[in-house]
Length: 560
Image (cartoon, rainbow, N blue to C red):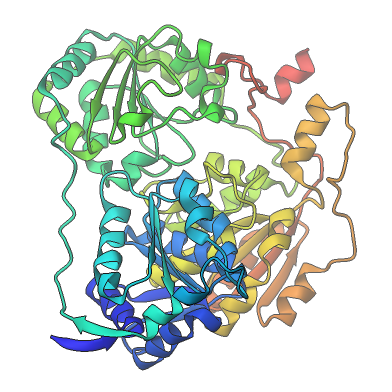
């Protein structure tokens, strides 16, 4: 047992937890911790982002891509509040993160001191748990608990705020082995399992809907075995991408507002909907009263709070979905649904995703990225039309290879997240697909990528407007384009080059593939500015408040 300062205890606890990378930005209140990090820079890599929000998104991207806990740091006051959007993003998508902030000394708390903020009060609604540490003797225990809480059950972000005097004070420290994280299975009740098996055996038209919980629980193998054993088509949410192989014959595409017609119509016709780790977001269900109206609903989820929250279900099993699926697979014999699958296949033929292949478009950009990377890249997105195209047209075949802000819909998420993903997966190609509106929000993180030569590729789908908002204005607001036109003098090529990145502009479809191949081969930060029409739209689409069975595309609009 040795005597260490609070700052040194923080670093030792991070090492205990196997943390190899931290993202953050220093300041006065957290200086002691940064001084301790300096002494351990050969063991923990610190990435200085351009903004604290970038640090929180980078920690999030690192966590999503690796399955480990992401760690970010910031100083008191504005440093801490700049983490808030990233913490909320992680909270909405159940991402394990530990955010460490420092505050003014104990004697200055509650006195409106310089750069003082009650960050635990601010983040209470958007963290799984948070702490303020005012006694150095509690520090190690709190940090260990933070990592355990972030990973246990349904993952999520935890914030630890530490007063500056605690980081300077000393106390005894003894190294501990991290607590083992056990999969949640004690909530899986026998009667619930029996009911689930009975419903599956009786079904003639089962449909599986997969959400982010299947990714978080690493349940891909069990999910694939389950789907093929009961011969059921599979659709996913935005967060569920990659949990089920996007090239599998049973896969039907995304469900919801911009889901495929096959998924939306298939779920509407199904007699049993098996929901694996999804929370029935309003963007998935559309009109909730008419969602899966012909089906009994069986929900498998780790969080009991999600049962009957948005959609009333007929049965549920609570627990880790990997464990639940494993148990279901052991109890079920293969079931034949050839007629149902044949019907789904006919719908796939009738309602394919389609776009204009004669010019440079968002879907063409995504399909070209898919072909160049052979579906073997970590794809990160911002939020908007490009995000939906990335979900629709890239073949997401593995979990943890599609990183996007689903619940909060955070513009500015992608570039920081891509940096974090690349730090966690050095051997993978990492591409952030962005809109020009989103790039404006986080372009400063290009400087972070170039500072450390983190070779991420930033593909900007540049339509010179806020594309998704403009799409709504076109369809539902009489083409009144209030504050959505971005046609100004900003040159993204010059901006990128000024921050030290390699940059290309693509205006013709023939230019894209060779540019992408060169960008990936360079192994440096690259920005590719792809110019597309401002009037491109994401189809299919479900109007707000309408049932998903009312999905329409451009051909339907021409008919009507």
